[in-house]
Amino acid sequence: MKVKSIFTIWSWMLLYVPCLLASCDHHDGEDEKGLSISLTWQDEADQGTKVEDVKLWIFNADNDSLVEEENYGSAQEIANQRFFLAEGDYRILTTTNLTEPFTIGEITKTLSNWDNIMIGLTNPKNVKDNAYFGVTDIRIDLEEGYYVVQNPMKSVLAELTIIIEDVPKGTEMSGKAMDAALCLFPTQKNDDGAYGLPSIEPVEVELPTILATGTTLQSEVIRLMPTTPASAASHIYLRLLLPNETLQEYDITAPMMKVGGKYELRFKHNKMQPKMNLDATINNWKDLNNEVEIK
Image (tube, rainbow, N blue to C red):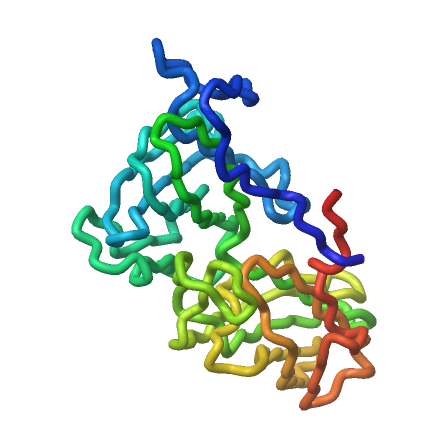
């Protein structure tokens, strides 16, 4: 099924249009003025994620200056806020759950270029939870008007699950992803025209070690930066140590893992080869984003 985005940006509404969102903030004499921001999920699978930390930046697109910087404890808090902006073009960046091990750099009032903003990880191994970001552009044509913008949030990291069936009980799996990006530039666009550009510089990410308690090895969800654009594919090295001490090594080439992508790597143990080249049409590699239809 094809992923379809239903989230649209209400770019502006004229003066005296009544507030349509219950979360709108009311100011004496200013009920029909200002900008309200509502966070939505780009991927239906992320709905229900607990939001505990929200960061917001509003930039003036004409001169790259930072005009608003706020922190909130929930999506409801930001929805209740009203921003009063002069006429002009603006870029809105929001992040949620961007806490340790996530980092964000180059956000200051004297920021000379918003393209330098980057989201990174203090330790790329065993990241337990994802963080989310959204970027929206809006033009304020009428300073006295009321504007509502919905900012679709998507995962910073790609998510990978590895499943190997029919292994001897007690088999141990370890390995690493070779071409994960070092960081992500949320306000830059990637080749698909979407915000969120992985860095050119790669980093190796050690995969968690897993022990088969039955005949199937299945990892928990592995969260890692998407594939660097410097590589045309994802490269994954797997190491299986069988109960009889036999060591098996596999060099796997798979499609690129994209920002917010969800993927599954599945094998029958007796079908695995030392070198495997997978593409999107091979059953061993599944792009789970294409399995969910957003209605």
